[in-house]
Amino acid sequence: MTEMTSAATKKRRNKLLRMIPAVDEVLNSPEISKLQGTYPRETLRYAVQQIIQAKRSHLLQVMDSEEINTSEIKIIDPAQIDAFIARRKECSLKRVINATGIIIHTNIGRAPLSENAVNAVMNAAKYYTNLEFDLLTGKRGDRYSHVTGLLQEITGAESGLVVNNNAAAVLLCLATLAKGYEVIVSRGELIEIGGSFRIPEILEQSGARLIEIGSTNRTHLKDYENALNSQTRLILKVHTSNYRVVGFTSEVTLSELSRLAAKHELPLLYDMGSGNFLPSRISGLKDEPTVQEEVANGADILTFSGDKLLGGPQAGIIVGKRRYLDRLKKNPLNRAIRIDKMTLAALEATLKTYAPGQENSVFLPAVQMLIKSPDELKQQADILIRNLNEHCPAVNAEIVKDVSQVGGGAYPLYNIPTYAVSVDPFPLSASQFERKLRFLEIPVIARIKNDRILFDLRTLNDEDLSLLPNLLADLVKNDR
Ligand SMILES: *Cc1c(COP(=O)(O)O)cnc(C)c1O
Image (cartoon, rainbow, N blue to C red; front, top):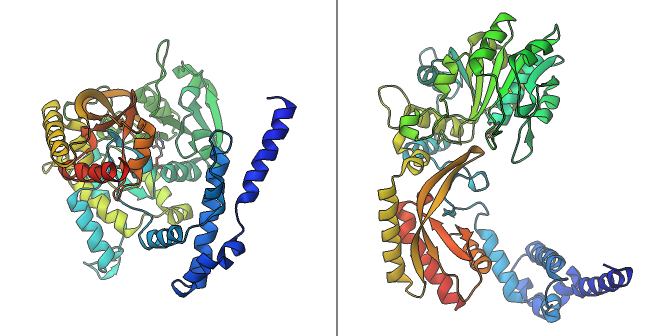
């Protein structure tokens, strides 16, 4: 861009921005001041402020690229204010339909809970509970006792602890066991996952010193051995859950690390990310060891999320040797990242489905989506097409084969074959259609592929199959 055009552009931008009216100007305008009888003054002012702010950010986005309708900038319509205030009565956090095919989608709340877990949450929310009250003795009880037995039984570990999320779990382990000392990590495992969780930064927060070893693609046992000294307090292994180093690679196995750690009397901490209890013959996830296997392979402490593939609520689960977990429990930081009663209730109900002898974890929604068979997916696709033809025949839809993903930064290379219903957005563009879907009464989050909208059957349940056509009928009615 030349100096001249940039000056001209700047001038045009400023001119447009100046057209946005001031808050008081709007409030005192004849049309808007009429609303003063309808809404409290503060509400009206807040609505006007927010609408003006939204206008401003929209304008900043489009002002260089689109023809601008200047009267739209200047005028604030009383109907807009009515709509804004009506919307504010609804909760901002609301249900959406996940048609993305990504099972563990962090932005839309990761794993949905099972019916049993939901009921447990309701009970814990509505009534008093024996959260920290021992009904046997009538004395103070242990918050964690509701899940530690289950965790020991399922994973074979000596002890268990649960905290707010996995990031907090890792932080607690490092701060308790290695603060002021050195932690050895392979360069191939210095991960960043979404939402600014970075291993080097978590280490810094914990007060431990990061000792990087090896190279991005290759780390050997002797790299660990050479880094050991009197300042070393912990060996950390991290599951590279959202990427893979492929090609000329070498990684030290957990068992090898376990032997090394034991020899030097150091704890081996393994951040597994998405903890998985399901054997691969059920989950279909190849080369992905379960938590129980990694406990057996000699990790002293393992941490993982409750709301990834486990299919439960947001939580950080820690299992491992009692002598380390007892120290974690006593750290005041543990109190600051404490799990709440509703989460604990959901977690217990979820863990119960994995308990040996009463396994019914295949009924957890996240697991169901993962193991849905091609036949089931195809049947669901047929039903969705039939419902679409009935309720919204204007939509041109067909069944296509595609791939779904586990998500949640888990199993990055693992594409699961799926069926999707592909919709022609005409006369809208795919991105216009996708946007309209997000503004429906129940917003629908879909995928765009080759200028068409895809509804992936993997993450849709039977209820969604009847809801979706009705919602689409509204979209089509209002916009064509
Ligand atoms: C997801 C993940 C985390 C963070 O877990 P949260 O439960 O989101 O806090 C940490 N480490 C790894 C390897 C992960 O995959």
